[in-house]
Image 1 (cartoon, protein in one colour):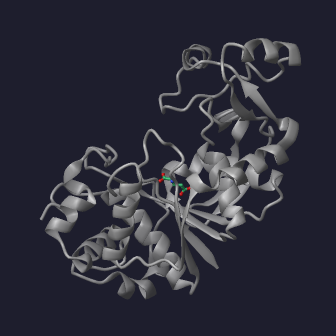
Image 2: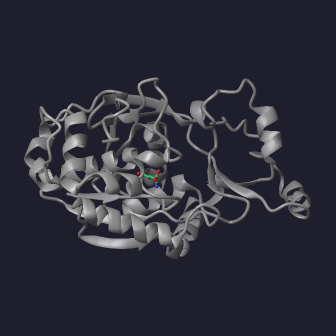
Image 3: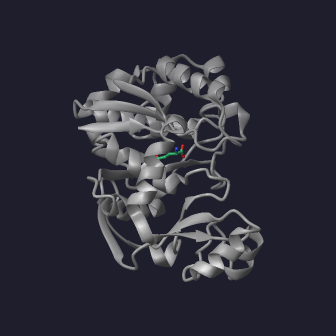
Length: 303
Ligand code: GLU
């Protein structure tokens, strides 16, 4: 059994990231599995090595150990290129600008995700050559139009069609950066990951990854999506809220205090008392994680 931490080093870890990391770790440790650490640092505009180093220090401070890694996605680009070649003709260049994509995808879905309408799906070699003179293309994958069925470890049976949600999704951006869906699929398969525990904001991505892993003839992990932490008004706790990032949390709490409060929020213990992460391992199988959200009361992590 192998799980993973797959953080993006785009800032300090936040309470929400800590909750996901704790759950992924508890799941692995409660099954006697191995934990892999993979730093998802492909986007040079957002990721910094110093954030990754702080992140590892924060995980260590929490007592969330790993057995293998860190792997750095930025050093694995050859593997992603190889996967693109393996996908063959189902990968095609897309010359659409962001503005064109916005205009073409009305009505707006309101969640920041656009369904790609397939504009560049059937360009002729001549059209491609012509467009390539003025613009570097992104690459998209001709995703199968089928219902993908899978059973989420916490949320039960799921059925989703990638063509209805994303359309042909990006596998490489126009600036050459490999897309999240491609890199994560290649890596989870290559690293022999058998279980992915992560926030349920990534649930819609799971069918993309299952289809890619199948196309690349890899073995898919089991996925378990855990509730997101939200403020009492329903807003997601975001990285912008500085008072809940690891810097601020470490000023206020010991590792056992922070793990205890999270364990209480997650329903693992009855009172928010200090408990070191490793003492939570035997309690993990009792966690009730099928909900969409967990509400964090205003003052719960502020004192
Ligand atoms: N790197 C992604 C993030 O930090 C998570 C990827 C995953 O768990 O699949 O949001």
